[in-house]
Image 1 (cartoon, rainbow, N blue to C red):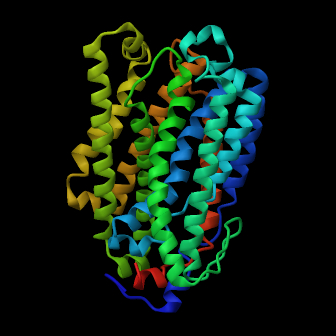
Image 2: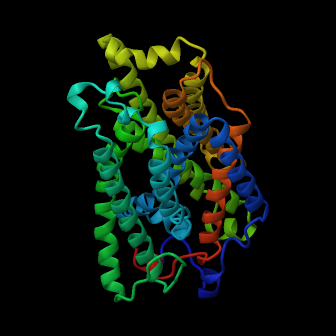
Image 3: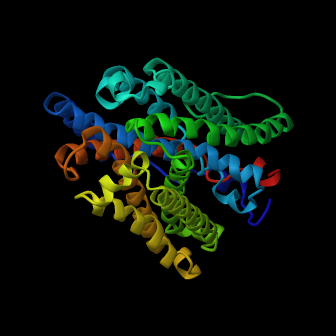
Length: 396
């Protein structure tokens, strides 16, 4: 075992216990609010629904992608939280199903592809609704298969069975080889697949604008949203005396450093896209930024910069902040809010096209429902898995 020692009994104890029943109540109320919104203002209801789908997809998909990253990079520091890393894996198929439901019942409301008059003639074929949703469905199906298989193989090393996850009875050396192989494949498909998915589900909500950097910004935003959530969960664990004593608070430095690094990379992509478009000064490109910066949406635009770049830059450079669970969890929450505002700015603005930002009873209700849904599925996974890995701690 590397970095720390534990007994078999310690390893098999779960880190979390029951799901707070209030989450179920919030979810039910949210569904009722969403149903009311569909009847009274379907465009607003489906717009905030789409915003939350895009945002929580990142948290769900990151659960498998980050596990793949630590395996490929031999991140031994992650061994104490190896079972916690895939916390949102059960959320991934659920969000994917919701995407299919949205495409069936609200495709004409959300996406401009259905109106050929809004699409330039040379994009008719590429933005055909059938072609768009077919290729995005393929991306989701492939990513679900790879992600669920990878996490199930990891759990199989300690003979752990989780409902809704496929089980494996292969010999341990073969499982280890498959984990290494699938980890590499998953990262490649994550970058390629979600670049395409981001174009279709977010960028082409304005069919007259495109950015060559948008795909990278999309999947990096997904990954940071996962890292920020992982930082919050890890901070909560560090407030538990037994976990903090066994692992040590220095471990949080790694999570905080990763969050800081990817926030800086996100900011670099943000600046690269903005400065190139402004220097080009081509109306086909600049209108996307002009409509947001020089309007009542300006605060929304700059909040994401302040929350995702300035605050992490000024705080996460300092090790004492990164090793403080309360400080790190607060900064991670700020980053999550900034990334949600980014998604809201990209999607909600284009779907509803309001003169000023709208975030009323309907938007708050639907968003709280998604938070509860993600909490329920993530907690369900966390109360089923043991505290530490046994086989992978010895054979990482």
